[in-house]
Image (tube, rainbow, N blue to C red; front, side):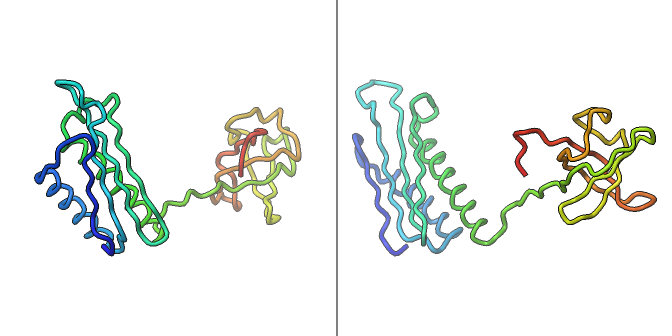
Length: 187
């Protein structure tokens, strides 16, 4: 790290054991992402007036080139955070997941969801139980009456927008499932 680790205890006494645990957790983060610029950890016991059931709040600020990550574990209703070490574990788990997500994005290893092929109903042949779909690229895809998923074949009209799953049939490409796009469908 370029900037030394900052650890702040608010409304509680300083603890060397807790500080050592934080240093261990930060070392693990540095092994995962060597480009960490700075890290600050604030441990707070906002309800310190209670005799028992004091809940700890942890806030971690982590800076890496071009990004500031923040993990806050407020313990309002989570009574496992009566234990400071569990609150630390949860906060460092959250910041580690953020760091992993950022690293995946930077490396281009993010899952991309394919958009289903789409087009418009070009022709319908109800007497022969099939129709054709024209794609945006001008390809013509056959579909059978039984391929319609969320509508009735008899209610389809030419020009209806659909998306579909394509497979190779005996006589060329065909749509195995055809879904009529509603007015809220986003392609």
